[in-house]
Length: 241
Image 1 (cartoon, one colour):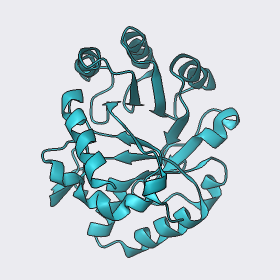
Image 2 (cartoon, rainbow, N blue to C red):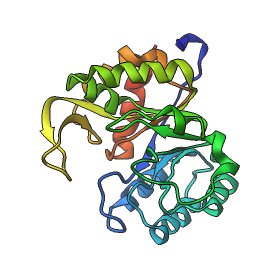
Image 3 (tube, one colour):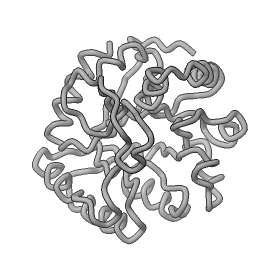
């Protein structure tokens, strides 16, 4: 599936991201203050490590900002009910969600109501055709893909291209790739290049080779500040052409 970027309207969403924060402890309020400061009306949302009570505190704070639309939300399949998805759609006009692979994070609720709006993310492995058939298609995390390429995993690369040829790409995550390999912050035995913290804009340059696969809804998945993400968005708009 080759995409003509010139014909697309890619939306690079600044995101409130909680990927590496401890549940309920992360300083997401700093991002809320930045959202107010820059009067953002649209963001992506990654409540990845937040438990239900903390998520609803976050939603309440977002209701007191200028944000009107959250087109994309990372869905925690282990504890986000259909009613919570209804809430996001009704209050923030959410269009698409993503989940991790169901083999890693089994789905607890019946998401059939939103199945075509839910896309499965590639992580350490590539989503199977069986699970992709149940949902809307792929959520590509390009940093996870590039990390596997750099680690010499040719089979991962082959399978990603095979899945893309067959299934829709509904949304993607944009994180960075480091030149140097480093230990995973939670599992030091795992070495990686992909990161949710940007130190240099050039860490996004790897995306040029994946440009043909970038869908309309594209969420920046970094814990960098909203102010830094504004600079990142401008950079991405210049290199993804």
